[in-house]
Image 1 (cartoon, helix red, strand yellow):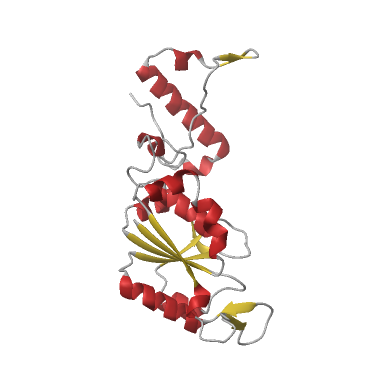
Image 2: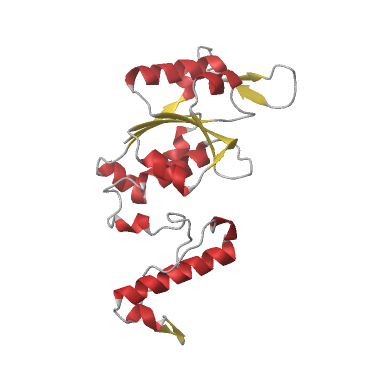
Amino acid sequence: MKIDIVTLFPEMFEGAFSHSILKRAQAKGHANIHLHNLRDWSSSKHKNVDDYSYGGGAGMVMMVEPMVRCIEELQSKTSYDEVIFLTPDGELLNQKIANQFSTKQNLLIICGHYKGIDERIRTHFITREISIGDYVLSGGELAAMALTDAIVRLIPGVLNDETSALSDSYQDNLLSPPVYTRPADFRGWKVPDVLLSGNDKEIAQWRYEQAVERTRQRRPGMLGVDHESTD
């Protein structure tokens, strides 16, 4: 998968993309992530990419010309499945959307800043608008990092154990069940006996029941349909 990210602050991504799963995904060739500084497409002497909003009001707006020049140049080199804009008023990111994006070949992600981007960019170029929560950040960079991580970890071959992603929270409209590791008894706090039993069927049933109960307690709205036994 190729992911191009347009941003005013490419240096913000260095730490996030240089460690852990995202680093391994790029090293293995499963993900090619490229950062593009929007100022490289500015025609002004001082590389400005923002201006005052028509109609007045506080805050600056990212200009249409440099953004369009950037997008069109990138599109001339790559055929994108989606052009994604990170914005607080977009679709709320969830696991289903991450799954959808993970099946694509080429994604272009646009990071907004200031008061937002000129609406004409959204009208003529953006195919999906995504929000990571009902709050406002200073720019789209942190949201782009979260979205990229959520997508890349789902690409086959990225995780050492590919079944791990299938048991993540939200994959089956359920939160993940509790997990334990060694030692089995710590300060008298014991791991449930069923997990030590070696009975795969009973363990699967326990995990399912725990996932349903945890979802019922913490995210009851996810239980739109009845979840029955795995038998």
